[in-house]
Figure 1: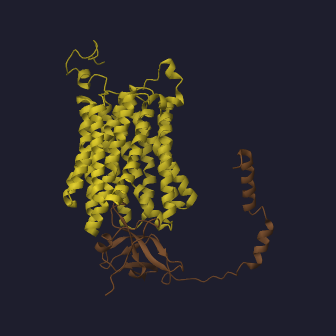
Figure 2: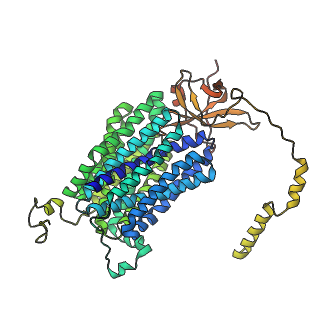
Length: 415
Length: 143
């Protein structure tokens, strides 16, 4: 109970730390007389380091086993130092190093939290747990953005950075509250697996299901990410000063949906199967793309953002679940997860580039159609190629309220 | 193309030549030509920093920060680049406005930047695509 609450708080605080100042960095550095070129450079370095460190971070978290809490501890400390550097030393080298630190620590946070979640509840209850992670992460992001907005409003941009740094302390307390593993992740492996070590990512890539799912993840991001950017710029051009309010609604509606529905989606996925849940989530992407392509009235598009929330919540919940399926919830869990994260990162980069290119060449309107087409491809890939990955019996069977003959004798008897 | 170790040596030589240690005579020669430096103090009302400062439109609405300045080859400002609109960094548009549309008004020791356009017309203007593309600068039509 205490551990579950600790996990909720951890997700809320870590997510809040990042979103309290992340989008603020360009504005802040501009106000510190940084040129656009150097701002672009540090942001690019951050993105590149984040991409490059994903898979090594996943391998590290797998390798340290039960000491993943220590990794998480230091990663949070690093995340706390970063905003302080922005406040105290907003100059070239310190900011560059801070961006690198932030990217690397951020890459460690995701797999560490995922592995701790798995070790906390085990595979059978993982759906609900990652759903709660999604809920509190979304609430944290919303509160972080509120801090950022307030500090902008009161004219003290440094406030957001200081608040983000202060959140380190409760986040570390939350790590403490989680306590030791309850369902240890199996460390035993077959002899040939034992020698894998750093080669684990390459071995995992032999699994066809992982390659298919990674492609699905990348396509999902290609089709989703740039929609909001394109639409928001359009809203600014159409509505001027009133646009800010509509863009705020575009951002808040999906956050609310994620916060409200993530735990339910996690439970539903474990009950009805992971493939149906994936399909249901992916279908929202092309529908949203088409609606954004066809509807010109920005106000009408605000409720359409419910679809982004549904798709995003499912996407966020399913990634750790499918990774647990693919690795049997054993050794290379976070390595697998980080490969999927990398695929998503590549998709994000492609999405922005593709949308920018097609908007330049064919107009903004056509860019929405291009993204919607990528969404159709993503759905088709899930529907035609992605197998059901869940192998353990459904949770209700284990609880004893499903068909009794599903598990081996004694599996429905709980200690 | 010089081979591996040769290239390394060549690079060292270049680095040595470029570093002040390489040719101490250079520095000595440069000394007498250096111009004398004077300083004067300006009050906040006379001059101020402008990058990152918010721009206000003709109705007093906050348009967005001034993020860059375009100058011609004489160094005279031609246009200011403003990050117009958006919410928490999402949905803002870069627009370059003619320098004569910007007025710098001293206010409590700081310069306030006023834009002689409405937010709406700035927001709807063609986007500034950066120095690598055709640069579109917004100006008011002459009467």
